[in-house]
Figure (cartoon, one colour):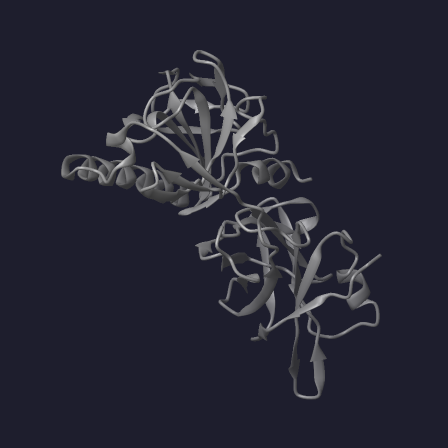
Length: 332
């Protein structure tokens, strides 16, 4: 059953209009028609909706586009897909915005619509804000804003016992090494923000095995060091194959203090995946990988209690549950 669309605040200026590469997205004629709202609401009932509205003199200005999202009510620490659907007769030149504290990267989809991934931070409370600007070639623009409701995640706390030197506060030398590792990881994300989308709708698990450590769970090491588990642990024996989750370019191959042997893949448009604790890396920086390309072997390097794969997914600098990547990219 179709839900009543959510309304978004709108900043309106003259007409919108422009042609995108690959097809016309539309020109906003601001003369309302009886069927206009029904047409823009002809969307997947699982999606929530926010529309730009406004007024000019005594006339009502119809929404130039509609903002919808899936899933309808995401949980903390997951990926959301937002869609901008232009109204009939509307042409959009550029679409930009921010959501979940990160810059959004829109790409064209069927019917002249545009979509972007949006991260929901693991500590998001109640809702995540999305603000989108639609602009024409002359610089005229409108703004869409929406508040996406967020459900709390189901997280657990786990106590782990590891070697004392790994569970105790880091030495000065190891703290410096950790800082260097973190800087390298941030640089991978920064470069992914600057590159075009590489990922495709073909997406797979890096390993088909049971989850041994959930995303977002709290971890207490030797009763001293607590941390948030911002990845997904997948069971495996040393030497088991690990594959890339979707298309991308290998951005970093290294050995980190805590993560051991790692491979980072940039999927472009802000999206990065990481594969930790490997016994062996099978790729080099600059290699292009597809969904299912072997990139490494399961291991027990770094801070671990046993062999497994620690799988990380980030959008911008925000870590999200890797399990949410598959429905987001596959369009489900």
